[in-house]
Length: 280
Ligand code: DGL
Picture: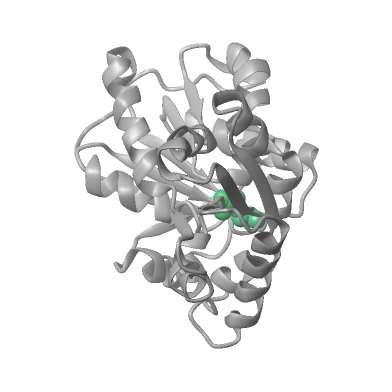
């Protein structure tokens, strides 16, 4: 049985399995600095990419419930794996029971919506975790909106560990960056747009670009996700009223506070004050 949720306005919740969602949070704080945010990273159980549908759903639901208990009315799953494997179930099965007025939004739809404006060849590649690629969520969502676009996915299981271990800009990363880029372009040489379908990957973008042939563009999600959140809040003033606006941001992790603070400073280029919590 859930505890009674706070009814007063609260921060916007931003959730990721680890640090990746910080690349999305950065855009929120830049474009929508007036809002308050709570960032929650499930660092103790990251990565989610190789985990089963059931487990990602269970862990994500625990995180969403925790953010609701902490006062959020709106939670963004700043994680493609959680958006692919848990979002629909949470929206359809859980929210009506938890509180039909609270909202959970993902980051795949806003990314998919823009793709048609970017690709000229109408051949798009998606780079993501094994979970995101196996779920076929990008392929399904792109086909619904733009049936003429061909979508091919490539799971890049070594990329999240490279980022989580701060190896993303080291020479050792080159091998795995080139490998997955070559694989996807070999599957479909007509691809002109590669979606970075994992919030960890923007840190690898400079390296990925080194291995891209001319004419292939990288699509990073942050700018489109923030635009979509901005539109959402404008279209839903009732939700906007429930979001506090003092420009504050707090950070929570399920792992060690010290570890999070060091890694977060790599992503955000600032020192953060972080608290440890447990999810169950
Ligand atoms: N950052 C997450 C995403 O966008 C996944 C990382 C993980 O495997 O946990 O998919």
